[in-house]
Length: 178
Image (cartoon, rainbow, N blue to C red; front, side):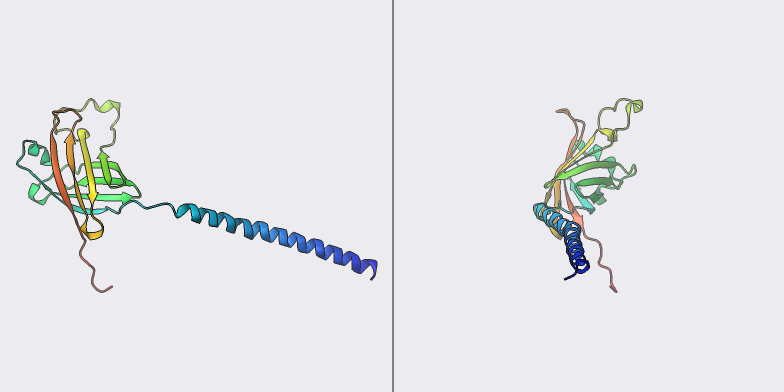
């Protein structure tokens, strides 16, 4: 075997080792990382899906019912929930379109108004000021049989107006022709 062919074999062997090293680095390591990510993600559970329109049923004859002016017609009291992961937005269908922002933790939902800043002034007492509104609810059931049971409160004190409610999820009409 000549020195040229021996040198060629040495160069080819080194080149094969470099290709093998590059292959392991560029393919093997990303595959290992992907397997680790998938294994870690297998432990995650998504939050309940609660987006949609909800029909609200409450005792609108209670002393706190005057606070139910959130809705134009309490007999047709609806609220709409939009959701992105655990973050939710609750919109009341009343004349003021009150919007609350909150979080879904397990089956518990808490939503409050956004802070309006220091230049707005202190909130007024009672239920006239939507900044005092707190929406607390528990999600019950799954899928099409979901319900919310909770409390609307205005303020945080012991004498604050409270309105217990139950809301049933309204399923959108099925589209035909699809």
